[in-house]
Length: 73
Image (cartoon, rainbow, N blue to C red):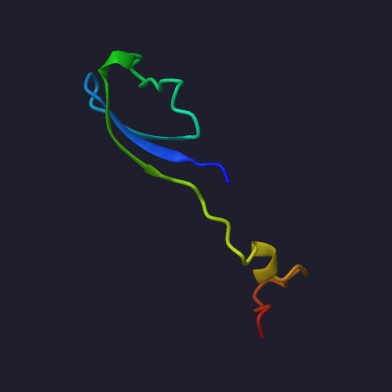
């Protein structure tokens, strides 16, 4: 499983708060104002999506469903 991390940054030049979700943070993100030296890293957290044992295809019926009907009845 690949690890994804979500980084929270703020630009002190234009006061933009933004999030970057990536596997590799070596490529420094830049703000829309293009002042990369003004970024402050506020924090990061794990953003890896755990695969569920119940795949979506097992929960959703594969047949076509008529509009205004309930396929679960």
